[in-house]
Image (cartoon, rainbow, N blue to C red; front, side, top):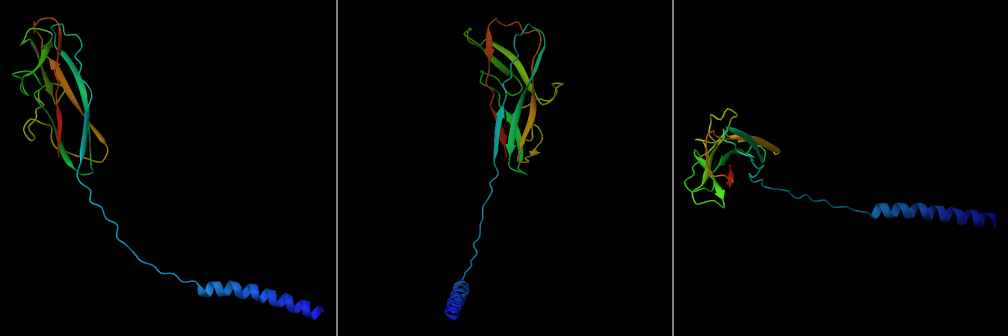
Length: 169
């Protein structure tokens, strides 16, 4: 009986061992490769903070605003500022319209590239816009310097304008 039990035990162990071997012996694999591609297009986004002069008392009034541009890495860009919405306004002679006032009531102001207000900020790339900048994939900021000149004795009231900032890339 002992021999039969030993034989059964040996047969069971052999069966377990060969079962594991036969599974490994029958396993197979196959491989392939595939390409992954993408084309990155140059792109930019732009935003700006408001420029509020507050109350104008007839004295020079200087304030600033920030323009934020985010462009794809190494994408060259320039930012231009248009003339605004007032009739007769240009990029060198900007005007705010009076709200609820007689037609033609405007308050003149300027937008500059520098805090000394010596370099106008216009809308023609290479002429009156800041030098080209290369995007780096992160937000990059520029400061717009606004000024209302002294001694404008216009009708009291609220004046406003809307400037469109454009990123050319």
